[in-house]
Amino acid sequence: MIKKEDGIVLIITLIITLVSLSLVGAIFYLILTTTNFSSKSKTYIQTLEISKTVSKLIMKRLKNGTLKCIGNTACISSCEENCLIDLSDIASSFPDYDIIAEVKVKEPLETSDLYGIVVSTKRKKSSEKSTVSFLFKKVK
Image 1 (cartoon, rainbow, N blue to C red):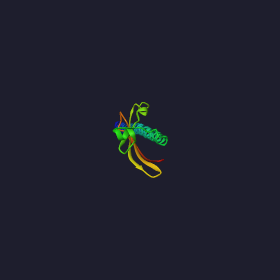
Image 2 (spheres, rainbow, N blue to C red):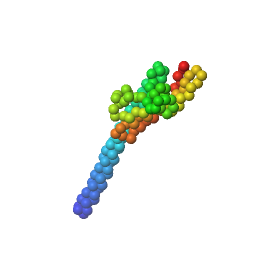
Image 3 (cartoon, rainbow, N blue to C red):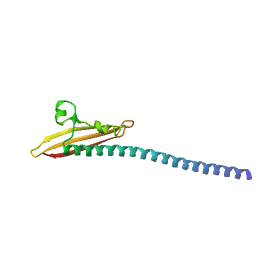
Image 4 (cartoon, rainbow, N blue to C red):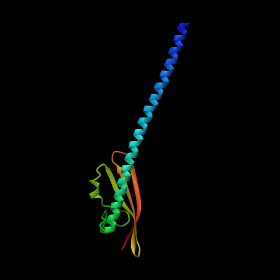
């Protein structure tokens, strides 16, 4: 009779050990998954902040009249629709990112000009990308 009780105690101990190890494994999995998600979120937030910062700089340059575009002759003389904005001085500050800014809309009005601009930022070694679109009204 003692041998049967020893076998039952052994089986119960093995079951409790298996359940405990499963719980510990599940906790480790959750910790690793949360850490990975957190780092991806951080990368996206950095990309978004760069897009917002570049947008503010473009608004400042539009206000001061110092915005330069690259591309064909119409783009260089005045930033027209579908012209890329020259960000060569900013690109060196963010070597791990591709930053593109484009004038999508330029609408001349009687007392002002209305610009629609899209700023896209992509991290080079990742799929994280952010896009910021804004309208800017420049008073003549």
